[in-house]
Image (cartoon, rainbow, N blue to C red):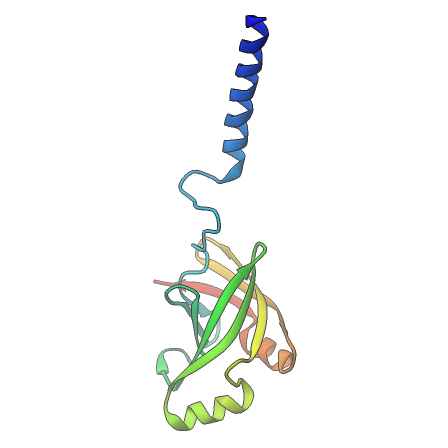
Length: 146
């Protein structure tokens, strides 16, 4: 009887070790958003995206010129689906008024964001309206800005 208990205990211990190894790789936390951090510039364009702080994304359509910045709150769904909502603007009053016509506060959209090293791809933009316009401005390949 003691032999059976020891065998069961050993099997249970091995199972726990295997399951622990499958849950999350070492050094990573469940729900880690390390891929959604830093500043990114669109290859061949001016567009800059910055994942600034917790759940805040800044989009600068004209790069570092700071004419306008679109502020968004975001969440990550599934593996690489980002859901965003416009929450405010940075820039001149004139620029803010102009962008409000196209992307009003509360405007929701989503996209796929995949990262491999210092390269990223934004694709699959979905929105209730203006999706095609967003696609032409936002989708593409990005490089991490250092």
